[in-house]
Image 1 (tube, rainbow, N blue to C red):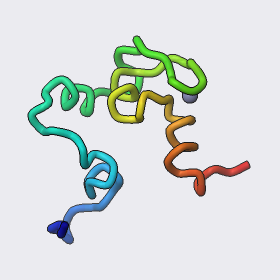
Image 2: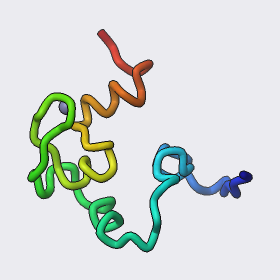
Image 3: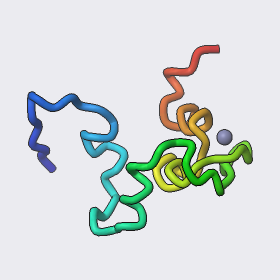
Image 4: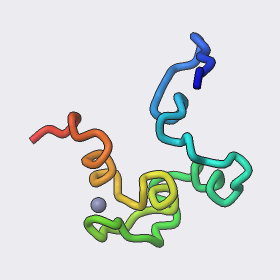
Length: 80
Ligand SMILES: [Zn+2]
């Protein structure tokens, strides 16, 4: 699968499709939370450490808080 890349656009994990590849753009409920802040609708709990997470994290961070999400997906970034 080839991707068209615009040199003007900054690439990030969100724009290159590496993480959001399985999202249906017609899924309005999920797209709604994509644009939400990380502290909006804190009605959920992290699946790992049970801390309060937002609707955005539930949908876009695999149901995890930022800390657990980063640990899971970017273990190289962790500084001990
Ligand atoms: Zn957590």
